[in-house]
Length: 377
Image (tube, rainbow, N blue to C red; front, side):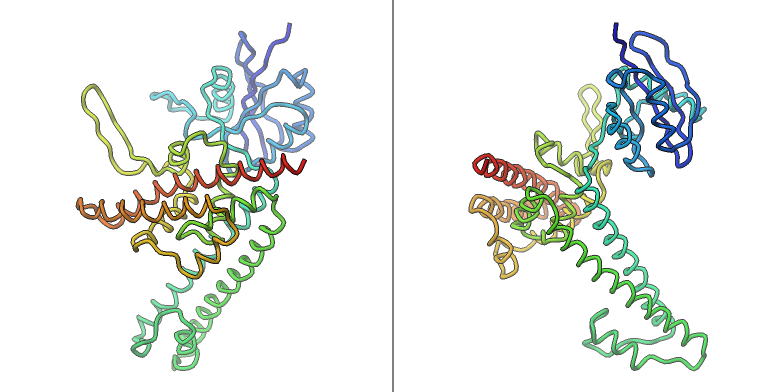
């Protein structure tokens, strides 16, 4: 008689704590093994028939390498959300062994929530997009260091020179000098860091363009479709697709909003209901992109030259949905301001509804692509 084994793995950079919960049986620890491919292969052979094994481990800094190793061996594996693992209120002792036992026990009970595991194409696109995001943060820090240094020393550009334009950098290089060699060296270092960060972003932008060209056809189609929306150009569209994967995995738009953490907190008990700010318990990269895009809907509906060019590659149905989004989201922004909401609150609400249009366009484009593939076959 076949008995399913549920294996909990507490994964670290060098070690993996292992526990197993047999179907209808006991839960026991199997010790600790090295986080190496050969050790994982020996574990799978030791546990018995691979079709009876159900592995799980928490998503974390080790990524999805272990997931790919186990699935390659034919085993089923779930990567679970750490924040959604059930925990006892009075539990005060935390060890690798206990964590593995808890994962195995909860996996057997069906109380774990699995996360989406990207394929190779999505993982590559996600890596380069997040590298660009890190470069943008580094550029902001470098600019702040330089501007605050100049402010402390009393240097200000001439009126009409906007910060961080070409004229501004030319002014810094040509006009700003110090008598003290130490301060001159500081200035040169800060300017070098600003230019270095700008160069990184240019290189990563080119890498993203190349990655999009080499991406699967359906992924490219969704990226083009999302750019029909106001406020979503190529980098934003690529970020959304890299973080979401196939949009059809979300059955409803509300699920996508929850995935982005842009739904309201709620505490209800009896007849009382309390709702607060957004949960922020979703994908922070997705949330940042849609809220940034939401600011463009402050302006009344219109199609500029850049947006018109982006919409040339999409179908009439997608353009119609994007135009509907402009009217609805602009009206929503004005309505919330009239109710006394701050601009930040209004834009956050607009970003949440924008996710609904992103979901609708993604579903439409993926369906169109699959239909064209069936006709071609």
